[in-house]
Length: 361
Image 1 (tube, one colour):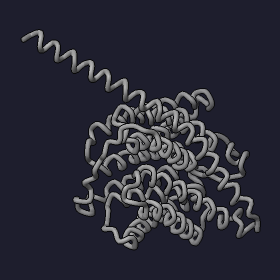
Image 2 (cartoon, one colour; image 1 turned 45 degrees about the horizontal axis):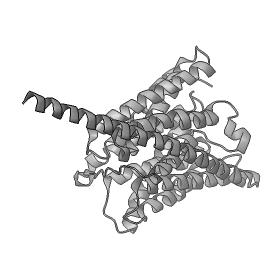
Image 3 (spheres, one colour; image 1 turned 60 degrees about the vertical axis):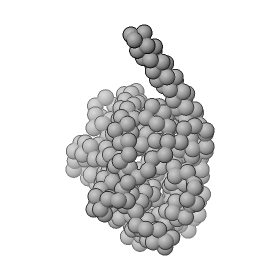
Image 4 (cartoon, helix red, strand yellow; image 1 turned 90 degrees about the vertical axis):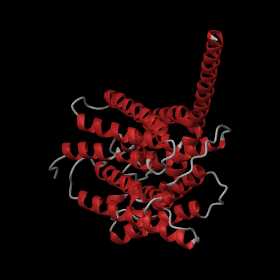
């Protein structure tokens, strides 16, 4: 029974915007420039979502439009922050194009209808659009990391902060991710309580798995790493968060998050950060989908005896990853062109200023 959907959607729409804020605070170096590029991407993502919904949805469904716009803006801003190697201009261009060309189609395919396009084509389950937020974003980031271009090194100083302050980014992302998974249902129902509880427990388990594997790997405690653990756990449980009983939730959060985190923590020190994190996220989603297919209430293999859902979940992850990889190459290429244009304009302006100064002398 629906008791309140408008407040739920509007509150969730506000809270999901904490996700890019948390990611922004992971690294305080050049925070102003990265905030500018993230803000531009947030605006583009929101406008693109609003325009698409204006064409496809009912004009009276304003709360759903607001929520979808916040979803799109939050993930676009996050992608801009993670694409910091391109600099402010390149990151804004990359994330903005990605939001329009990649996120919107995949998001529509997962939540645009009941049953969704992903469910019709693959028979897969994706409750909170993790295929769009995690798989599509990660595959495009992998593609971007393969192209030649500027590699502006951003050194995190969070390790020098106290643990309470260092855990603020993880907390903000966890709150935003919880709001995302609860708000994805759009209405309050008998399943909302389980979704909320599973989201909180699953994200906490993800942060703990990061800490544990970090310790096993012999690395010192890293407050900023907790945020990565939360993001990976979100991808692991997000496919079917309301369909997981306590045992299934624990198995999904622990096994899938551990698989993804292990790839990040155990990667060679010289590996490109965005690439290894992106691979870890995709692995976590794939493993989480497999565990979901085995243990989900009512339709997992434990209940039906069929392994068809396992193939469906893995097939959906692979298909979205391949498509997003190709599209990511286009977005990254456009970002590199934007960087060249911006640098030429900057050089020209500097030369003109120098000439003007010489003329005055």
